[in-house]
Every structure is written in C-alpha cells, then in structure tokens.
Image (cartoon, rainbow, N blue to C red; front, side):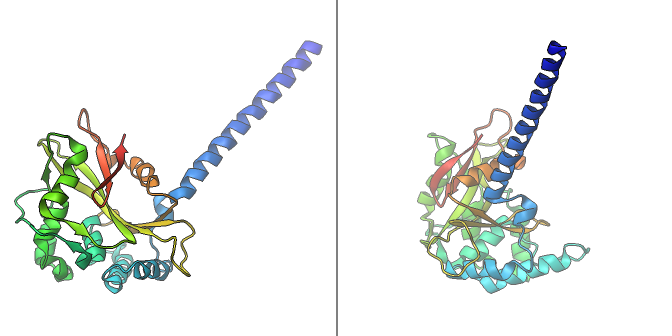
Amino acid sequence: MKIRKNKKIITLLCCMLAVLIVLAAAAVKQSKRNIYGSEADTAITESMLPKVSEVLRQAELSNVDLFETWVYEFHENKNTTASAYSDSDCRMTAMLLADDQISCNDAEEYTGDYLMIDVDKIKNEEAYLFIRDNLNVFTTLFGETEIPKSGMKDALPENWKKHGIKFYNDKCSLVSVVIKSIDRDEAFVGHTGILIDCSDMQDVYVKTKYLFVEKLAFNEAFHATQIEKPEELLELFDSREEYKAEGNEPNTVVYLNDEYLGDLK
C-alpha cells in the first residue's frame, strides 16, 4: 500500500511539473509577444492612427497627412474588390515618410527587374507622383546592387557610399532587410520601414523606447510595432520565413541606415 501511495504522489508531482512547464512556456511566449506584438496586434487601426501620426510628426517625418490618407483608404477598401491607390508596399511607404530627408548624389536609371511592380505603379498611378519625381533615387536606394568581394554584409553600405545616399533625420533610421538574389550575385532591399526613437517624445502613446512603422506588402496592413531596442527587430524579422535565405545562400542582413544591425539566421 505504501508503494502504491508513493507512486500516486510521484504521478501527481509529475503532472504538476508538466503544468508548470506549460505555464512557463506560455509566459515566455507571451513575454516575447509583448516585445513587439503579433502582426494582428500591431496593425494600425483607424482608432490607433492619430496616435501613430503624432509620433510621426514629432519625429519630423514627411507627408504624415498623406500617410493618414493611405491608412484610411486601405481600411475602406481592404474588404472590397476596389483598388485603393493607397495600396502601397513597404518601399513606397518608407519613401513617403522619408521623402525629402533622403538624398542621393548619383542616382542611376533603373535597369533591374526586382522593382518592376513598384516602378510600374509609380509611373502610372497619380498617388505616387511624389516618388515619380525622384524615381531614380527610389530605385537606387532599394533596387539590385552588386555584392562586393568582402561579402553580403557590405553590399548596402557600399551602395550608399557609391551613390552618396544619406538619411537626414537624427530621430529615425531607415531599416533595410537586404536579401541576396537567387540566381545572381546581387542584393536588394526585400523589406524596409522606419524606426523612430521615441525616448524624448512628449505626450505620445508609445510605452517603449522605439516605434517601428512599416507596411508589410501590397494588400497587407500598415503596422506600428513597439520595441525596447533596435536588436529586437532581428527577432521580429526572424519570425517571417519570407525574409530567410534559401539553401546555401548567405544570410539576409538587416541595417539601420547604412549601419549593420545583424543577420537573420
């Protein structure tokens, strides 16, 4: 009887331990989610938009009124077959907010193919007229660039140096997720967004030090993600399989402006 009783106690203890492990794992998962939220949590809703816009204005970013229009029109059209002119992608959105704060001394005419959809929309839709006037800057900033002999890590910095690219805003950084082309020794900006330092801002809703503003892709929502430090962007991007390198290709690289932040594993 004593042995049987001990077995029951051991079984009960094992069950309790299993429950604790599950709870601990859930707590860790929730803690990680609270760092940057799930994609559903971070999507910019119409009610959230005025708060995000206030952050953008305090960061002295460009075209905030037009950004608001794009977000509102996305929500108006996302459940219809209408083609909202605000259905931009990540690069158009970043260019909207950076606009006259981006300079490029030696922009080149685009001859690649990765940005063909972007270029077509910019050339043919009136919503992107402000980019059309600086199309060569846009394509030089985000399009294909040669990978130097020193490796993938230097591809974007070398491109910025070669063309004299600068982002003049000490409150923000342009985030670039740089991916290698599958069939060529070229790299391109597969995703981008604006990282805003909110630490000195007054009366804004952000409860953490940084806010990362992005549009995921065509037909997908605008997002505003709160993080404590730039390195948390690596964890955010690591959760998106579409940014990962394939096969034996070099790792995708993330930059703040032209400064290396880290690789995606």
